[in-house]
Image 1: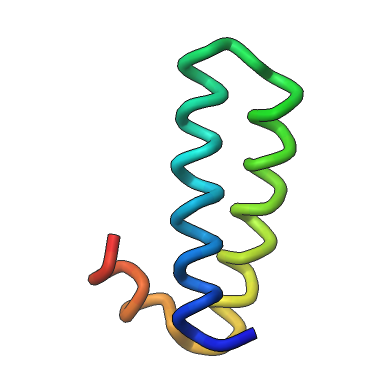
Image 2: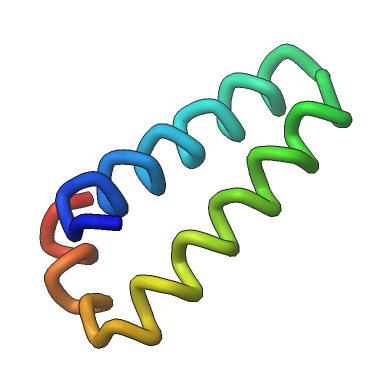
Amino acid sequence: MKKQELFERTAEAMDNYARAIEMDLLDFANYFDAKMKEHLKEIKARGLSEEFALII
């Protein structure tokens, strides 16, 4: 996955997680939390943590 796509998917998962929490949809929140953690793990493994932090 390209860096830009990875960042976009991570940000989208974060937004969807926040919306699911606001709407009290815990099953969806758990799903997006897992996706977010998966993407953040890849960001960290690729050494892109600082760059991603600047974007969000």
